[in-house]
Length: 112
Length: 116
Image 1 (cartoon, each protein chain N blue to C red):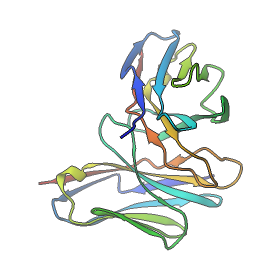
Image 2 (image 1 turned 180 degrees about the horizontal axis):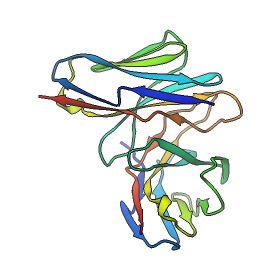
Image 3 (image 1 turned 90 degrees about the vertical axis):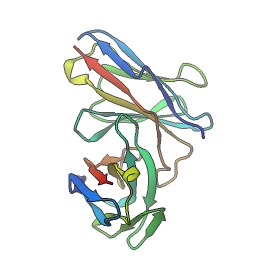
């Protein structure tokens, strides 16, 4: 069964303290892995798409990387405004063309 | 920047009643989706819609659910007879293309449905 697992569930950091969030997946043929940010009471906001192992993408203080089994979202010198829930979603191969399989998210809290 | 808008932001209904959740996708997008998120749980796919028909639906999307694009701008989700377990945040999303890999989804801010 296709599955996406994110860890940790929650992460508290001091402002400026760098860290990484993990998204591990077991799917039948990865087509794409997506990172989204979700603020309380809002819909997910797209951050990155990664297509193949070894790929990396960056945006401001965020950097996403992908291996054959997992993806990391590295956050460098975070600021309080980076506080949010970060969601990982995977598009698997096979018969399903439209469904994304979502992780439960990591709630990131950055303290000033 | 264009955005997906959803109304109402919060809907309270009694068990057994019909509800219609409304969405206005981004104007040049062609693919439309409904997702739901029960409080504290994962985002779950409900249905995708393209060219005026359902492209794919999940097991959650049973006969109680239907979608419609009644005009050129609106996209609706109807739940015919609501159950307590339908209480969730419902997100509409749209994207501008479909290739082998999903193009990024643009989400609205959701409708919180509370069934009492």
